[in-house]
Length: 307
Image 1 (cartoon, helix red, strand yellow):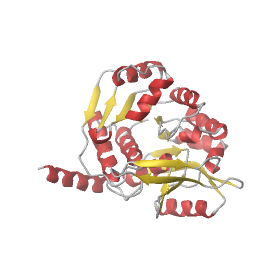
Image 2 (cartoon, helix red, strand yellow):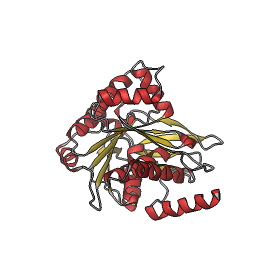
Image 3 (cartoon, helix red, strand yellow):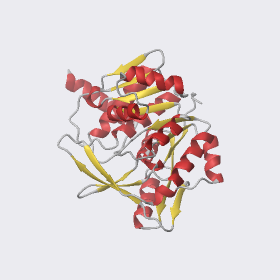
Image 4 (cartoon, rainbow, N blue to C red):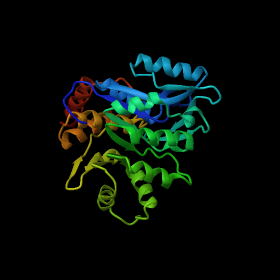
């Protein structure tokens, strides 16, 4: 539960992969990005996923260890390869994704070791992509059912399929914080046949139906809103010229959970999260070097530019 301790155990469970651009590749996968940023901000980030018994998998472990992310819960698959996503960027830095299928993270297994981790995690972040396969879906669902800490559903919907509505509804049954962008909230409205509902009305319907404390709705250049049952807290964000938006949402989630676990006020939570997301947009790749002092220096730089 939230508190004042100096370091929390925060888990990203789901996909781990390489983000491959035309000429470069970077560590990727939303839960992985989250765990990296959580570690950089000062907590103990843990990634739970599955990699292939290949060179790409070995390189992932080397990079994660350099970033001081716990790799003890990475499973090795002897048959399936390490996942990857091919990314192309628009002029505005908006990424387009093509994700490989039937890869190692699709076969994540639930084990007694994972149960022990779930029992001690202060926060767990999961999404929909790694639930596309029934094997990994069952593992993720078991993990969040066992989790002692706050469960954060970062929808992160790259594409939908026939099982998507079931994935969403079963995930929401164990969701304490829902994080979505404007495109994703429209997808959720279709799942619940609420296409005509205003965002606020729809989010509060979800909070009445599921154990959701608040919804974090990111709005790109217009910042973000934290929607509670009885209030809405809006932060307009910062105006920047983005280089690459890949991973900005994952940095937002990491900073949000960092502040939430320390019982900061909603306005402080969303302000820090927006700042982290904007900072990542200024860099190529999803996980540039990040820390609280770096974010504070970035905030000062932004303030000066706006004067």
